Image (tube, rainbow, N blue to C red; front, side):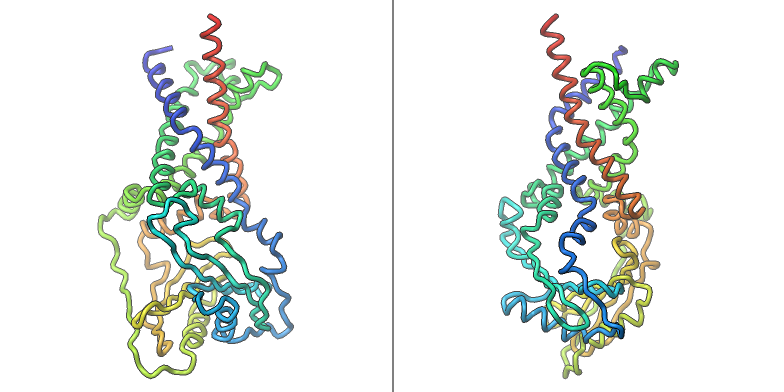
Length: 382
């Protein structure tokens, strides 16, 4: 073994020992979260889905909003809602309030996070859901920040992921055959299942790591975009070829004599302007001069292709519209980051790939640790 390979091997080993447990946790939770939508839709089918009538005419948005607020109670204001083009989906009205920003854990930083699901044709409440204690939401925040306050947890996850990227590169260097002979090619590309336990462990680490290397690298880099602001800025600058962020005009509502149901006017206008949208999200106005934000998203599960509209909360008048096509390359790539990270950008095949890659990534710290233990025992015997 050359001196260079020895150094690379030591770097790979010690970085793995330092961050192995975090990589294992982040990979397992990522693996669990990939199919959360499909599983949730099955488990909560009666809450999330409705039987549409023949006419398929929904009640006014304001009527459904009022019903949601009554269900949630006076202390819970609807912050955001999601309506669907799919006639069989219940509409979701969400209430969210942050907790103590200095709290140690995720639970302390969140006061409440709930949703009411309503049949848009009858106004019947199909269910009320507490996301704060939802299994997949907890899994997501373990993945996001180890269930700690973002201030503490995200840097740990982010820099552990950066170290994992270095390990993928050093692992690739160590995997690379010295000579491309038939024997070396078989060792590098095939797992010898009829070999002993130690050899199978080595092959599972070495060979499976090679096959998912590119996918796990993409998953790791997109994860770093979320966790490390400096990396997100770097990705934006490189992809947009500009250090200047675009100026997005933030409109203001002008208090006046309110017209009848301005939120309905805004919502109906948005529906006409966004005919291709599969989902329409409505954010309630905040403050006396705040505006109603409405976004139209193309895609049943992805988020990146969205047009953003701003409406006056008193008149329901359209104040501003910014289409997806107006975004620069940096904005589009950052907006696409989540969909790439969970594999949804490629639909179900992409999610299956992300699932397998995450599962293999979770196994790498385990098999790597076992290889290290086996070598340690071998040295002691000598």
